[in-house]
Image 1: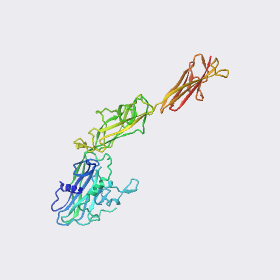
Image 2: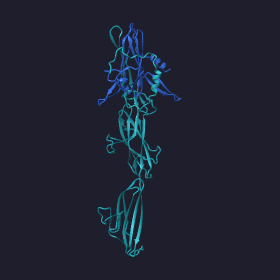
Image 3: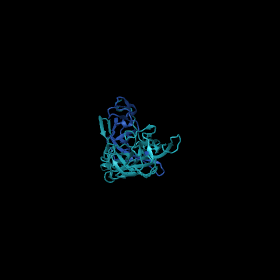
Length: 153
Length: 334
């Protein structure tokens, strides 16, 4: 149900038209609004926001498509996180960087230096960049979606 | 750490991806109060890039850019700064409670202050006389702090900024020892208050909307006074000793007066003094004044007692509730 809502929204994106003969990446952002109906049941809706306020939970969707005639090899999608967004999670386990894009790894494998010289395990809020590095080429005509979530700081 | 392996181990997600699972997980995250956060009026821009090689060498493309404007969130909290009940006494004026008001929103905002003294849950209603806005030193001083006048000088706070507010009140004269009187300070965003999510179009900092946050843009906290008073009871006892070993009040008999002051209550009395005029037809026995077991001189000097020719006077000073003081002196029947 919810998937259907999101996909409908995604399909109705005003995002740029995918170039007919190119590899393209479309970026869209939705805000999750939690409302409680008369029966006290919580409902989550995804809206395309023009404005947000701190604490809003955002869903970032990256829509990639290889509209060229040849497979796209070594396909890597990178999204630097806006400063005002605190990363929370992603639908798959992308590579992340917690140091501005210098080093990359799974979040669970990364650490952050503390002022006293020791290191602690990296937390979602430490993430500065997110990256998906595809193992297989994107075939001609192929595509898909990538997704991650964050909160407006 | 590893360098990003191009064409590495990551397996990308294919549609349809498990949104319902993700959303359920989101619901399990407790809602928490947000610190001031991203400044109202700023823009959040997101752009992703893709790099690939489809036969013509490595290429990089940018996605479209999504811009989101950050609206002003209206949030405020009020906290009582007093460590406990503030002690007061019946009829006392300019009794002071201290609060802090914090702008938890993300834009500069003015806050309307108010007090509630009749909210119940206490024994009496303090009479609030003034609200003062601290000048930043945290210490009340009517000369340097600002008297709050509604509509004229609402404190204007930056995001995350706090201000100390003093509430002055008079304690009614009719209250009794141990009574509590509660005063709540309220602070409301001048732009507007309401249910979280209520939006005020165009009134946010930077020209966007102002949206009521989780606090309702309306905060309050309670402080309390506690009355601490004391009462004094005096009991005077005369004991006669005649020259013959009896207790007849005959000429030459010595009368010993014992005046006991008993202080009751949780407070204390200040400047307590006992004065007793030596009765007619009796003569004061020189050097007979005693406070408890201690002899006091007749001269008006460093000790607490004196006899000036007509009356005995003992200054007891501050005496706390639950304590007693006994003054004795002697006279001789003429």
